[in-house]
Image 1 (cartoon, rainbow over the protein chains, first blue to last red):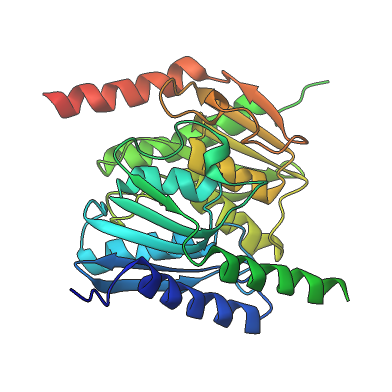
Image 2 (tube, each protein chain N blue to C red):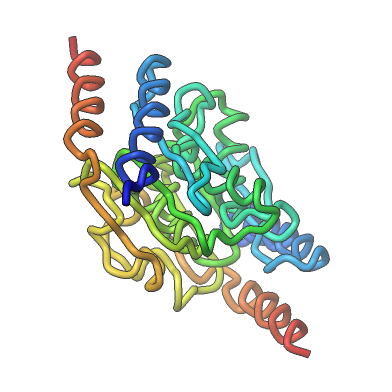
Length: 147
Length: 147
C-alpha cells in the first residue's frame, strides 16, 4: 500500500518552514506537529525577529498545537523538526507528553539526547529523517554568515 | 552598610508572584528578573490558564526581560525563582546567557541540576534562598488539590 503521509513527507513540510527562517536571516530550523496525519501546527525559528531566545521552532509548535487542540498535552501527536531539539525544547516536549519526535540533523553541541531523561519515557524518538538535507541548510546558513 | 536589595529581598518579590499563581489554581511558582538592582520582569506560572506547558514562570520572565532590554541576552541579569528551574527552563536560561540564577526550593524530580551542562558555564547558581517558604507554598498547593 502506498502511504503518502510518512515521516519523509512531514519532514519535507518542516524543511519548508526552515527555508522560511533562512530567508529571514534566522537559524534555519523548522517544525510541524501532526495529529491523525494532519498538520495542526507549523513554525520556524524566530529568535532574531522576536529578540527572544525561547522562540525556537519547537516551542512555538508546541504552543500552537496545544492551542489548536484546546488542551495542553500532545499525547497523540508527532513533532517533526529539522534539527535535533535542544535541552530547552526537549524539556518542553517532556511536559507536553508528545507521542513521537522525529528530527532531521543531529545537534552535537546542544542536542537533548546528550542528557539522559530529558525526554518523556513514553515518547518515541526517530532521528536522521532527511538528516543530510536538513543539516546542509543549517551549514549553508552559517557559511554565508561567516562571509 | 545596610544592603536592602539582597537575594532575600528579591526572592520575596518572586514569592509574591508565586502567591498570585496559587490563587489562580496554578502550581505556585513565581519569578523576577533583576538588572542593576531593578526588577525588570515579573511573572508566575500560567500553564493552566494559557493551556500551554511552556508557560512556566521562568520562560515568561526571560521573554519579558529581553523585551524590556531590547535584546535577547540577559548577560548582566539575575533571575530569582521560587522553585529550581526544570530542564526546559534551565535550557532557556542557557541560551539567555544570564549572569546569575537564584532559586528557592529544590526540585528533586525535574530540576535542571540533575543533568550536567544544562546551565551556561558562566552562570552562577545560588540555591535555597527562602527555600522553606517557597517549598511550603507548593506543598500546600498539592495537599489542597488532593483533598
